[in-house]
Length: 212
Image (cartoon, rainbow, N blue to C red):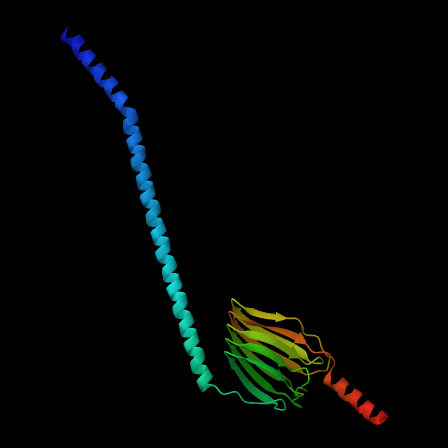
């Protein structure tokens, strides 16, 4: 009798626990849902903090870049004009529209920092020994027009920017070589070839003068 009562009591306990099992499962699911929600919230907060850090770094870099640009604008002076065989231009928070008429262009430089413009060398005669143009773009840039009868040797490097070279190395077989050294940071240059060689224009003008 005691054995039967013990077995019956055990069966009742099992039945009662089985009845409690769905509630236990539901409670665990609720706890897991809460934990998952809390984990998702923690991940979201970490993502927000990371985004704020990146925005702060970006702002600091921008402020530093602007401060450097201001210092360069105050300390770096441009020189050269349309007739110069050598020039060095700086465009900071501004632009430039320059057309060279040099008779023996040898060397030039252009820094475009938060600025840009156009550098037109199509009307210049290059030095017979060749010429070098060094250009840098930092959050700026512009267009460079090279003489139509020169050969172009391009050297460029860039980060989040670069050079679009639409001239290749073509030109007169015996024409002088223009070496372009370009570097860019979040900016760049577009290089095109001018129309009509200076020598051809000079010949045309001479013919017109003779006709008159």
